[in-house]
Image 1 (cartoon, rainbow, N blue to C red):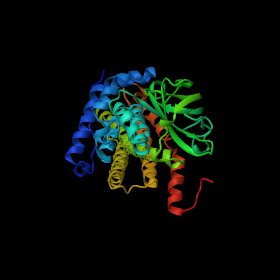
Image 2: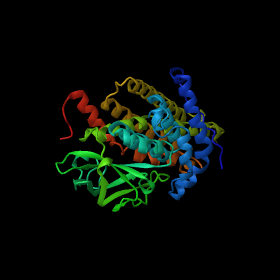
Image 3: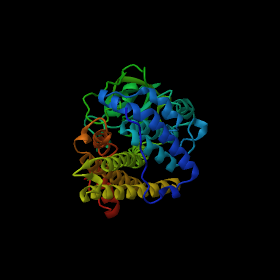
Image 4: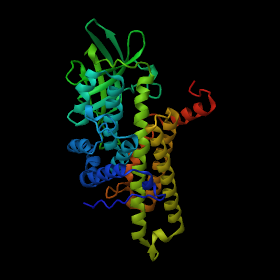
Length: 392
């Protein structure tokens, strides 16, 4: 088993923009990844299995709801801290970061933001500690980029609701204890419901045969006349804007996380290029390899600055959905390009499980699609700058 020799690139001294608390939080996450994720993740990816034993470690480094107030079990951290934690986790594996992102931004965030005090007290502490794991039900078999067309629905039956429908491509679904599910009421209005494992008619079959996010548990959420108590309805926001608000938080985390995957690929390629000799010298001395490496560090640096600035805007409550879309799209595309170029530098070794590059590349093929596809995010930016809706 190879030791994790990762050294984070910081070409523009971006550490100078961080507080000492930021750096302590990031370094703790980095050391945890080196100790508890890197040594096992290749094996779990090969087995297509999520390493459940790391859940407690994710909770310990504050990966579950880091910005949720301490009174509800969170760490009460700022948005840059959240981003840095996601960066370090995805440096280990995108699937592990997906597990944390879903728990934080798609389960804890809506319960905290759209839920009432009773719901916050009941669910958030157990989610923050990792005792309970959550999933987020928005995407459906017939409705991906158009979530407003969802068919999942619930009907008022007096003292409870009856929920019917199905969601797919759901991270954490196979082992989730609770699911925040978006469904239409009889008037066609979208609401969030908290569905708990054990409710009759609720099942979560696992999705198999994935070439991407193999170390992440993915599945479906199926609702067959599920009786949901009325107190499980999230009362403080309805309409499509409610789940999209959750996606903003998740997309922000992804914009940082993708940098971590790119950093890992770059660091691996740089070290390999210095050590690998051909034609009597290290391949890092050849101009074409230097071009690849120079372009990688340039794009990583630009993405780091974009994410940091977005984090400051988030902390100030000024970040727009369109700004978040731009960062998600740019940084994931950047990471994919870095992974592909890094694979080229390693030659045949680039496809080997002895190195993380091919795993990162395959994972990023999911990241570039979920939480809004690459093309959808371009249209979001286009709408924002022109005022003209290219979706219809």
